[in-house]
Image 1 (spheres, helix red, strand yellow):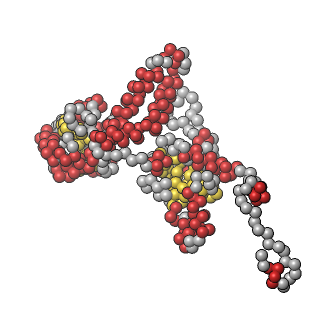
Image 2 (spheres, one colour; image 1 turned 90 degrees about the horizontal axis):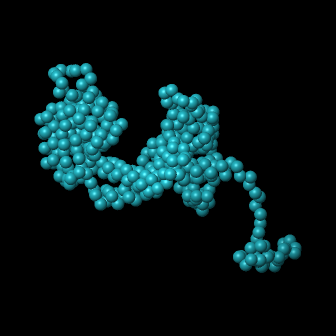
Image 3 (spheres, helix red, strand yellow; image 1 turned 135 degrees about the horizontal axis):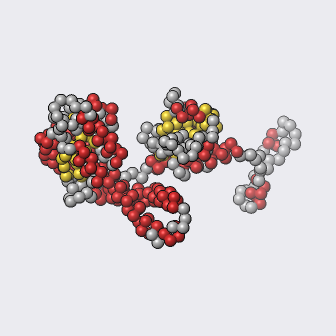
Length: 402
């Protein structure tokens, strides 16, 4: 819940006061169906930036050109709205509706429904864009996620850091920040989905999904460099999973004037396993062509969690159901693998499971089949098979009878 009784706070930034006022009145009158809304206006771009930095705003309607400092085209003022958007994105990102007479200046930023571009004076388009942005669920989710993070940091400092500070003060102070980050990440992963679920249901009627597919992937990837369990797509559209250990691929991000030499990847080649759309696989094709028990059993194998060759990766967003084949592997130069599209990274523990299964597949020694049928009989697990007496003479029918 935001300040007062408002569920959503919308900031209209336009240097023309009459247009800002007209937008405010229209949004207040026409958006009652999406909940209680507080509409604020600001003509000064600098003051708008301060408001966004210190207050919780859910959506911004933003002009691009600032004409408040003179007539005609003034150098730098044509980009005031775009520059403000860049600063918003670095400070506190919120959905933005560019409302402008120069849409071409921000058209490349458009990413509906969270970044939209509409032409000024087409108020019906502005109204619909704001409605879509608010109903996307992102404003509510962003607000509540921020509250959760703030609360967890506060509780950690109060319940862990403060009582144990005498001991921690003797330790390396540089380790406190990593301790806080790792604890925060672990807490969010275990608890945030449940808490956000309840908060959104109670406030806005929205529900955060508990999709197992969403928990499988980090999409887009978190690391800046190629890493183990990255899901890649090559220029031909084929899917591949990186099997090379993360420690061989790690690189320090480039920084100006590093205090020590930056670490470079140790691997020259990257080991990748082929993954393809499940419904286009040979196993599915054979089952559909000839539905025998043999083909059925072969296809059911991909659903097992203890199979070292095949692994099924779930569909998520633009990732289809993929069948990973650890026997179909190859090594490609690191530079080539870096040029491929990094679609996602398998999250823990799915990444570790995939790499461990690959290790078992290529590192197992294997044992011959041992027959323990007699031992099963002695334990009473199975009955002894009835013996058929050998034929006493060729061509006699009586010896073929049991």
